[in-house]
Length: 139
Length: 139
DNA sequence: CGATCGTGTGAGAATGGTTCTCATGACCAG
DNA sequence: CTGGTCATGAGAACCATTCTCACACGATCG
Ligand SMILES: [Mn+2]
Ligand SMILES: [Mn+2]
Ligand SMILES: [Zn+2]
Ligand SMILES: [Zn+2]
Image 1 (tube, chains in turn green, brown, yellow, red):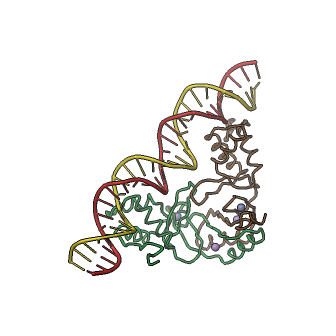
Image 2: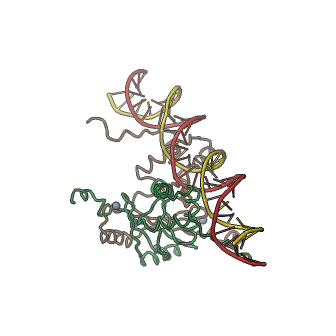
Image 3: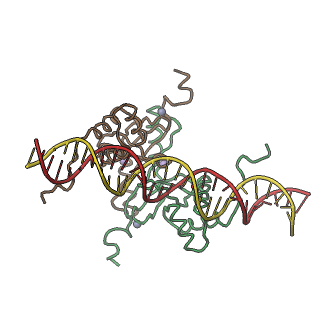
């Protein structure tokens, strides 16, 4: 029983690059986007490795993932505490928001219907100020 | 301007069969699942047609669609009024639930951050009574 | 330091859900 | 009834994601 259940997570140039890039971005981005950005930037990383690095970060709770309307997965460096997202449909800008009321509500509704092992997901989508129609003309 | 903006929606055997099947099911099902069920049942429909029929029903507001964790789309006959879902992860059993408080909350939070054209999505996932561990043994 | 071991990497193939193509079939208004 | 649209379906195409496997390279320990 001396072998760790979860293998040691090695620190590699690729994983460092992926996390560093996510730290600079403020919105949700797809794996393909991140891969392209890394390539432009010079420190290229294989696409499969980008996917693996992102999955590891999600498992470690450092990154949140959500599905865009067309089913593509999008990733974002997020705080480790439970929260929800206010996402701009146009530019991806995201604000983390908390909502205690819905936490209790979800648990209560689930219990009323006999559901266990309850989880919930709440996302709010809209158009941010910068992306509002006319925002470009105003400056 | 005599041509209708939206072409007439013809009533075909295939579209009727898809909607009739959805009316008998109480949970979210993937297009592939529905296609297989229709085939078993005898009145087969092409897979592409199943996808097109489902998309039309979604456009008409008769069917709701959500993405499972692996990105697959799942469809369910739903009421046309705004609501949220309590979904069993195991069998797909779904209960429609309303939550007035979150409606106001979403609008307020979005406004505070300058977001417009706000939409939100709230889903609760859990394990229903029938799928709870031990339920099978209990009869 | 190095040797060693096991994990990480990446190019390309494979997978699989969804959409597209296009020739053919069938609603339905007139 | 009939024509003109729209619908259908088999298969190809698409494309995000995962898998394969030979090779590279962190971490560990003497
Ligand atoms: Mn919550
Ligand atoms: Mn709502
Ligand atoms: Zn924006
Ligand atoms: Zn269930």
